[in-house]
Amino acid sequence: MSESIRTYAALMQIISARIESADPPFLIGIAGPPATGKSTLAERLITDLNAVGTKACFCPMDGFHLTNAQLEAQGLRDAKGRIETFDADAFVAAVQRLKDRTPFWWPVYSRQRHDPIPEGTSISGTEIAYVTEGNYVLSQAEPWRAAGDALDLRIFVDAPDEVLRQRLLNRHQKSGRSQSEALEKIDRTDMPNAQTIRNERQVEDILFYERADD
Image (cartoon, rainbow, N blue to C red; front, side, top):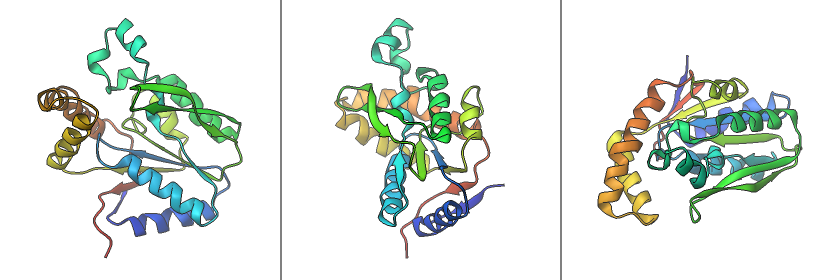
């Protein structure tokens, strides 16, 4: 059964205690619908963990997008963002490499190129904690489930649909889409994805709906 957490301070307290009591590496997975603030939360956690001397690294799932060329070849360009447009096997293998503490390059996604960059973040294998985040990190579907099973702490982040729609509209327009193009993508891909992600996830340890800290 998941624990509902409403403030970042409470979440950070739980994470710090769990890391302190566990052998490294400690893997944290953050999942949730698009635009719930997963990457912002992950980056904040990484910054704060490193600030207190816990060597931590951000490992986002977006680097495992299929390339635009691969999507075109498979007829999936218009479906970009759905679960089938990611290399799930490569993501699962990379999570296992984190557990094995081996050095390698973690790929990242470029919002300028709109394509993954294979040599994104250097993983030394000496880090104490890793934070991975993405829509499908806690998916029950195979082979994604193996990645979720390897995590030490599973966090699901959510927000009301009206909040997600406004954030997605802002995001898509900043990336160059017109308002009509952005709204079409939100209705065709993003919001159906959001419901699928909610309905087809593994049970999280923490359900996080953030409010402003008092």
